[in-house]
Length: 117
Figure 1 (cartoon, one colour):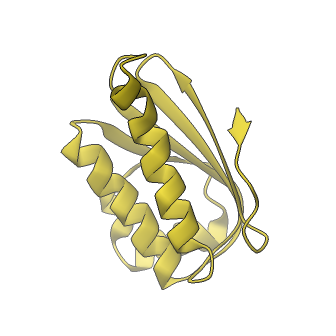
Figure 2: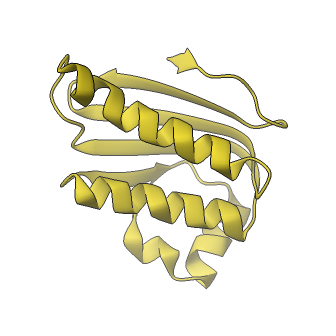
């Protein structure tokens, strides 16, 4: 996995295997980190398509095991990732969400938008 720079205690790493993109998020998903993370998420889904080096992304797996905080801005970012996946005819999976994030997804009914692994 390639790792991008850390932004205020938040990091993102991504790796491609065929049509599957696996993204690992670490730290806080909050208003301070979301803009940088959204840019990186977009770049990770587009770079191979633009270069024509691989099949288009058809599955996006976001590993949340190391996310220790998520506010409304972070939740909006996850929903935006789901929208990017939908626009590409791809599926979006959230892997290993911590209990606090499962609660947030459930309480806001955002869990219905994702496959939770």
